[in-house]
Length: 366
Image (cartoon, rainbow, N blue to C red; front, side, top):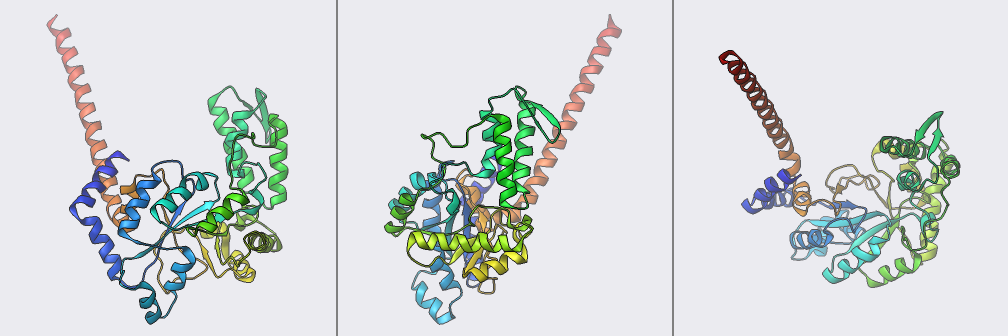
């Protein structure tokens, strides 16, 4: 990662990153949507400072209305600012979106959009994808048996293996009921209480959400009711309920229509056509994926592309990814790394050969 930062730092200061942004801007109407989750892991401030200087920052709905508008209307919305529009989105509704992203959005005047999972709001539970590591870490037993395999929890390798087993069961569940039943069994097997400790906040609360929305800098979309992997559910009716009930719950709490949606995990195999149909039937106008890409007026409004941002990444790497430089130069960086590794191996072998030769010569001269 350090080598990538140095390389793309050179691209930034040499003007190559600026050239990448210019080429995107010159290619016609475009919309970049970034995908974040946590806000406290890294330097989100530096990300926002870079992005607001180089791009025209918008709320998601505002940006999409502009993207799909007629050319005359789009030009009117843009005004004199011809920079490429960009949207910051955060999935899941982590509590640090309130403690970290929200203050920065207000201070730096950068709009953000957060996709919420209503069933996790106020319920004092870990998001299910965090449960594997949490349960193993908090286990009150020395060993546990899952799928007829016994894991000794004093061994680090067994801890990692069991955490993965739990995650896989929860991820690939064919219904929310199946997922919750397995989670209940895992908690009992490991003797871990249900609720998160009172002092630990994982998800946003409705009071936080309303405060953020009232500021004008934060907007919200749906992310299903319980965050299943929609493509793994076997009942089409459950897929419809997950999408529909999510929108209903959000609109009841927020008091206005919610028109944007994000598919959990977000690759096509994680949602599929049935989910697309359910999103349309529920009344969501737009839906975002995690499929890499930049959006155009020809993009499917219910399969919009996003680019991974993540606060833990260096801002130069995010800038390189958005401008297209990462995709262009990554093979070169990988090739260069492979060549360097090969030379290191060759030198190591030569040094060993020389060392063996020296020892042999020394023995002969004795």
